[in-house]
Length: 269
Image (cartoon, rainbow, N blue to C red; front, side, top):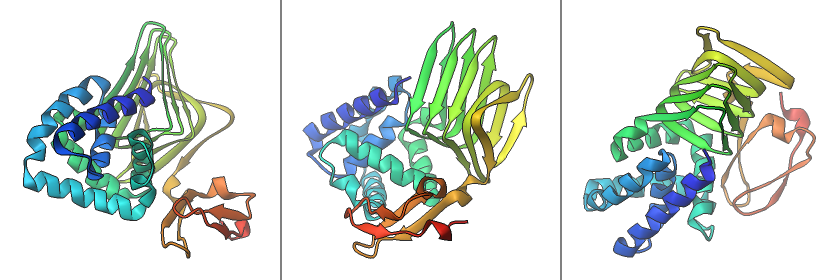
């Protein structure tokens, strides 16, 4: 599965909506929501949006969520393309648990199938999800018969996530965060076998379940504690980053106004 294709298909669906309803910035948020759906569902839900957009309450909810995201990250409304806007919105939602919860609730209204996100790879096949944000009540990553799933640089925001690898298959995970209402779990440079269940900051081992650690591999519980948040003194934009990404640097750059700000890595614990 190529998440980039999901973004492109979602952006195309929004451009069709623009043809009927005019170009409106809140529709960038709708594009982000569509990009979280399985590819076959995106066009189906996109076609039904005309009916939703005639509902004033639905419009207000979209505008309210967009206003919240725009306040957190003005760049989401400033980038030139829909594809870039969807990626900026994804970063914003991933960094804010409250907004993530609101988006998940909105997705349940947008399309019933948004409650589940499944990646099923079979028959000596390969799928990867890179630099993505997945929001669903249930997420399943299944590899069977010599197949491989790769999750890299990805946030899975779900109450329950299941990783299944059978018959010589692997789920390879690197720099991925699993976020739930009960906590967070961070996986780096590892592979899972059998069945692994993730809920919040807990891991359950099902039949044949095991984890293989590569060089530098780690499994960290409560990884949300690794996130730090600051306010840019120049433009008041909120800056969120992983502490590990800041080690060794003496300054950070605001993603909103591009101001370079002094930073003391020795203050990180």
